Image (cartoon, rainbow, N blue to C red; front, side, top):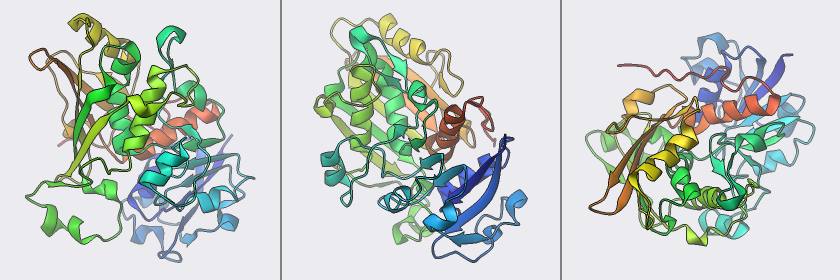
Length: 362
């Protein structure tokens, strides 16, 4: 069966990356692409690298245009997806790459986003541990199989959550004192013109932003890590108040990529072997999330264009902290790749279809 697909926000970075990956997917037909201010223009004017899709023209983003497809991807800024999702009841599978359906807590949404709160959807990070303790752990992919509504993750949020969930689930780190600093490429901020993201502003400079606990991905991380430590329901029902995180992103002059360095105290009594075993047990059989050999740490260059998250783990006994360094391509594993991986699971297709573990070098 071939599934018909519509992609909204197709002139942006996330929408363009979704299209790039879908273009090589054998089970889908990209039938419709939409935009707002760029509607009426050829897709090739905004995504000239997508030569196989150069025949497509951007249409208006309306429920009428998006309806009637088997799958709709929404690659819109936060707060804009909900107005469409309510009107797409006839679409069998809708995947939102924005934030509108990620959070389970309305109070968290009100505090970090504001505006209308929409129901949470299945969270699109298949490898994420959900459920721990005496109930055991499962992976989020079990909640994506057969899903009809999926919320693709925030790129920073999924990177940090994948970094730390094994330690939280196994009880070998203390999640009440997490510190994470991320070097991020400006493509994560979208394609709209922003003066502080001009080349002349970021080249040769590192620029912290959303400092002091204000970044919108913080409640998403707390929700994911709380779910990893609680019952295996995948619902994030465990109170996230016990997850305390100092989160500082820094824009650096690379178009793509996230390098997240996250640390947390070692839980009393946890041995070095138990700590490393927690991450090995979580990701030893995964295709797209890989724990590097002891003593190795990843580079963002190693994941460019790939749907992989590479993790380096170090144990700093002098500081009594676990250090996790994770590299992802924010547009692939951080957004579009996670969305398509989740789509494959929802449709019962091979999970790795159209997704590569190989990056591009140099």
